[in-house]
Length: 422
Ligand SMILES: Cc1ncc(COP(=O)(O)O)c(C=O)c1O
Image: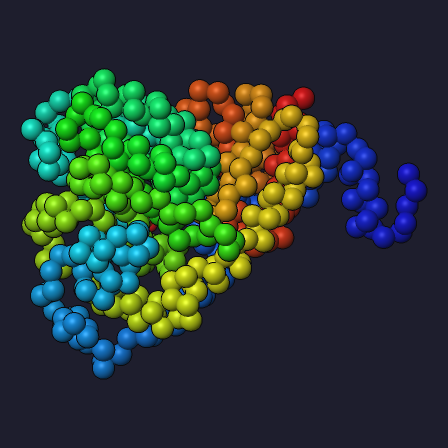
């Protein structure tokens, strides 16, 4: 081979001309230590919100609405200012949202436990008195699956399409099986496919006939405002659709600031109709006198003072995250495009890329990547019980590592897909 004398260029040409196995071995020999498993913000994302750490002082001990931050009074639903600030994130009114503590998953688990022990507003009996099945979308979020599994709730899977969950399959399930009590899924920039539910699908979810009168949609809108570009899809109005169809307690929305400010160190939200809010406030009020209002007011001050508010913060995040997603797309297109070996999503928001190998080789790809120093989420994690029946789906999380590491890791993943598919 002709050599230019430029070591890096010559090495790249050498690698490009060798067999897939040789290329894989060359990557492996580098002793990489890269990680694409963590759906977490980068430290540069967290830095955007650092001024929040010192934004409160002893002159801001009472909110403009007159609530003393350091004491109990104020109610279970959170301070007025936080409810007003976060209601638009989920597309609801301030009296349709509860602002809670640091984790939306905790709110989801809490409502599920109350439903099991007491039932929801339209229940004839607590859910735990009979079989309970939930519809989940696949590929989906492993923590949702694990929570349902641990609570003893069976799961029925439906596919996730570009316009949201497979609505025809859902309509069929809820029309025939009274033990199908609910659904838990991600309506915006779904984890891991990045798909967003269209309003047409939201309308059908809100209006569909269900044999269980207490069928409840738990919509985990964790990525409601997490756009990667300036032309986001319309936010689906699931609650509005259900209310319009005469099912005001069918939809409960969840969200948090985990990927707006600090992960696990921010505030969470639960939204629903006024009936839902009254029902759950009464139950949650037995467990807690008030959420952490100091944290809530810190968020209010920081997010309302930031140029452009929450949308401005999200744009700052997108500026850091979009190049990482672009790198994933660029490497996969260059290495796998047109080869018929894999398909992958090109999300317009959220935190993940979902890759499906054409052959049943996802576990093999993950294994090869690990041997070459690139950690991927275990194959199967995007399905209940960690079992992908087709062994094809791999969740890629490009948000946390620095851009150069994302690119390198994706080069390895792409070579692994090629090698595993041989
Ligand atoms: C869909 C989804 N919901 C919830 C969470 C966790 O949110 P929180 O920190 O508010 O519990 C994540 C984190 O990755 C997620 O992807």
